[in-house]
Amino acid sequence: MKALLVLGVIILVLGICSFFVPIPRHESEGIKVGDATFGVQVKHDERLPAWVGGVLIVGGIAMMIAGGRGKGA
Image 1 (cartoon, one colour):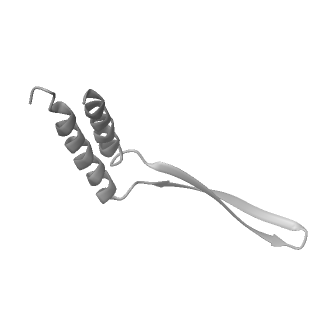
Image 2 (cartoon, rainbow, N blue to C red):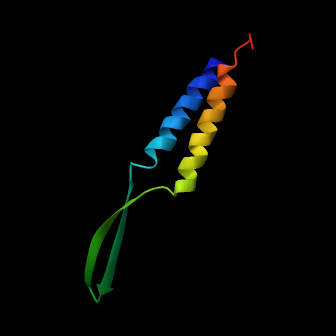
């Protein structure tokens, strides 16, 4: 049961971090004219949707509660 508690803490921390830490994404765009190729690389910093962070937080808390109830409870 302690493994479930630790996993719950990890998921809770990931859920909280999802609100603050952006995920970088790179994409290349370009055109080809004859033998010449012109391109540019674009970088986007995107965050996860708020509902994903909420689900991670609620799931982490639920796992912590389930893992915190030891054999004595």
